[in-house]
Length: 249
Length: 319
Image (cartoon, rainbow over all chains, first blue to last red; front, side):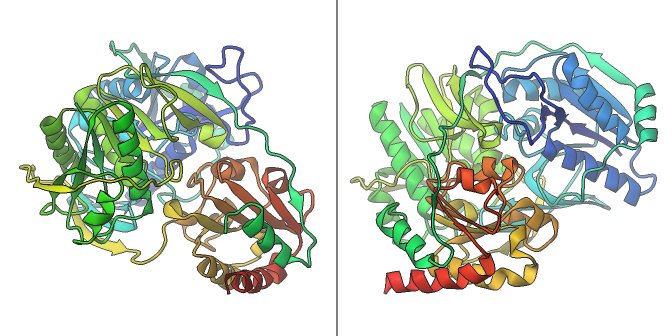
């Protein structure tokens, strides 16, 4: 079985977001870039499956759509254990642009299983996984919180409104994953980092795509006014304020 | 020309979020001068139609014989059939698991741009510009949609429920659907439990709760207030609470009316996930905890001692 994990390059979760001068993008000076946390869960699960089912997974590839600045993040994925990396040379405008490029990569690489996070922590659009499934016509599920290999394909759990469902899913398949899918993400060891340098990182040119939407402006949340402090022995006062002043209870 | 809205039932009922969605779709249809068509899938209790009517529903495509939860690909086919039927300018869905699974498929099929998790009414209709969260709640983006059909998934708690006179006309909706590729072998429902995404009030615990065994009083407070329970990341990582309760940058991003943070220090990743709550209450023993900078009301103190006092005070208020 071949697994392809799609990766988005995003600012570290501790980053304080500042807007760039054009108000369309964020200031990237001093920002640490990481594998999107949900994609990292997908990669971690791919590694776990490969270890738990010795010999049944031939390769784990990672792919990202972006300019050369995403390469350190792809190298990190190689350092934690992916076998090869692909970069599609395009700075995408929207989820659709990403999905179209990824669909091309899937057609070229023929993976049996495509994994990606339910959303990226920068655009938060949750679009790419389901778009890719629609473009390719593979079996698919989203909000997947558990994944095992089975004799007929995959056994998965997905979150639906007000509950969870266990599904049998044939291959090839595309799954958007969320928390619960894997244990702790892995920190690359020195040996992994050394090995990653010699693993293949292939750059492919994008296919033509017309974006369906664009981000025209960014804004930051308004600053909060000062917190009203209430003495420790006065829970009653807090409840009164919530009722009479804030009018939320 | 019309606005097509998919109203999802849970156990045959339309919950609060869906009435928000109905009110929102009604407003969009009025503002853009279009008919409103509601799509319902699965079996709905008879009395629920009157509720939908009271929030502006008129023509309803009633797919009562279709299963409630189906394979995403097949579900999308049902949606495509409704789109072919009514040729909408807007397709409106909830920004929940269903909406997240379906909206992108419509986008691909009809080359339609999406504003996912749109916050309330658009900034402008022509051109269409909507506002959504970006950087996991640390910023907002203005998204312009260039296509003719616009797909909107509405963020929960971002539009107020409004009553308006409707007149529900049920129309049988029985599209021919393909055989699903995936097969449901088991379904577990959290029946009766208030969903985090649907709650007006959320009571949330952090590492300051000390252990999994201390959640009883927190749950009691939540139950008294009609609130959903949530937690911070370390709590779900420790296994004290299930993953679906984790709110924050890598968990759920929520925007309830009232968010009560108990023993949560307020790491930037946590604040990103709750910052659009209308009112935030923080209780923490560390006066320097960053949660107080994000909160509207705060108490520096021991949560173990304060939770029972809050329960008593709340019950007194409601007497």
